[in-house]
Image (cartoon, rainbow, N blue to C red; front, side):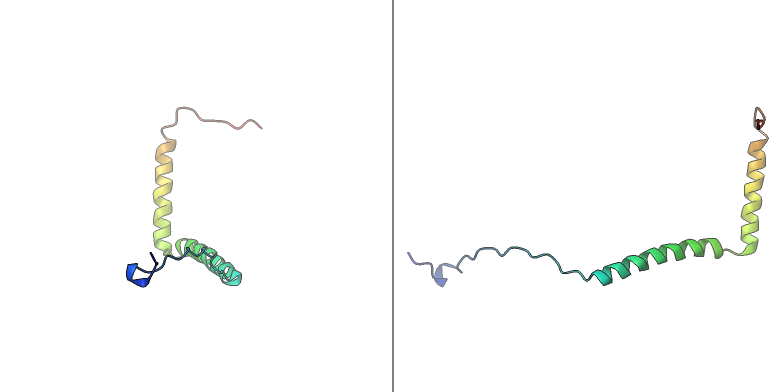
Length: 80
């Protein structure tokens, strides 16, 4: 029996997959961009809040710390 087109296409051996070609310069620059974006996001959070809101948050934190400090059972002393 012949293996002709009327019985279906001939079977070819699967080609091995080749590795994807990567431009190292682009990968390095993308990594640098991602790192700078992370730093920029942290700076936006730190420097992006208005002064009144920062003062309000600080006052709330100080008040909470005072409330917790009042419930201490012992005062710890530093031994130098």
